[in-house]
Length: 502
Image (cartoon, rainbow, N blue to C red; front, side, top):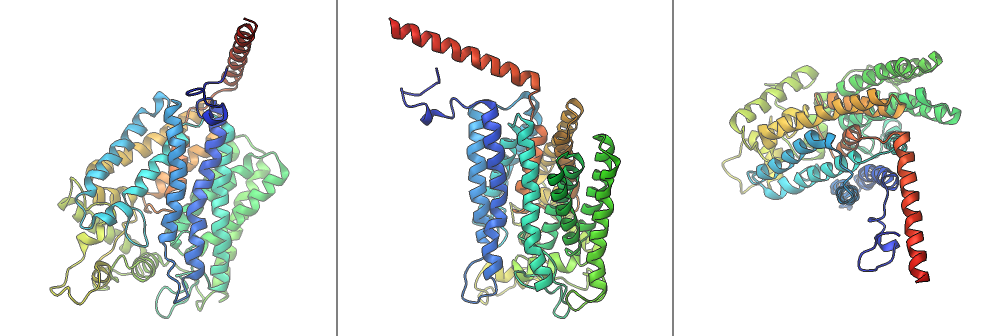
């Protein structure tokens, strides 16, 4: 007989009677919807940002994270109630909980507490977002079925597809974007999709491209294979229009993963076709630039510095000052990254215990003017502070600088243990799904060395990291559970029959 509370109906107690298979089905679909929320909500600011009268900002994107985060939170609560968390989660889950608690401690040290909690305006990645990331991680870690993994993998491809469709409009139409220019004269029509920044888009597409390539290689369904190959070609094409070092690294990682998948999964060698197709697609994008078909440029190069510092942080988000050409060469990608890393190390040295507070890095770097009466709010002060920036494109370093050494260490432990558990799961069950999830977790961990967290990317990564930690049930265990459930139901029916006769 199904369990109920206070003699209420069976339908109203669906959580009490939920099986692991039902949870996995519900959670995987819920997480896919949750991952799509931020890009879908970003449609509004991208469409209306050119309208002077419109007051729609990237706070809409943060609203999308809240909706997705609440979905993930509900799923996580169900997982904890049903005790679906296995012992293998002790290290990653424990480390992430410590990171969350230390982040709250760090929050109290912030200059503006509302920014620390809700996130800097136009960024939205304060402590509340970090709490939601834990929910994505926990919900995915409680999955028990390979079918749930397949849904998540398809969802990641879907996120990339949605971003790429908008990116094509940005590249060829020069619309729906803050990144048509990388300086006052140079027009490049850089793609940001629905990820708020070309560099954030490159991070998202790294996982989407990897998922699409491995899905093409592992799928035996002809229509699905063709669909995944088309998606992979599209992602490779769009990736080049991020004009970023991350884009090239992400593409290289995905191609290496595809080659490995052919041999590890013992797929037909003809599946290696996906590699030259992706390379040709990326080459076609670069050829269009050299042909003068995009913007007003006729040669291809990386614009990381100008995109992340001038176009994004300064012009779009007003989260930093403009770059100081006396101390950093904005057109030298390596110089920009090394400069930011050095400044972040200085911040860590001065604030090792608590950091600056979530989303507060710019406050530790800007120079406050003597007369503040001229400025209407703090964002104007930061924008006027030359050489100040708000993001370090190394998430491990950025976390340490903003939330303290403890947070930095626990982030590394969480990510490494997720990758290790993902590898162990694949060795135990050598399936396409476990291999894909492991590779995606590894890709996200590596991308964090040259990229930073953002509300479009982080939900995808933490879902994958959680899934890598999940303990899948074998076919024998599934059959045993079904038999036990059938026996229990039969016994309950016999007892009810006897009671009715009595």
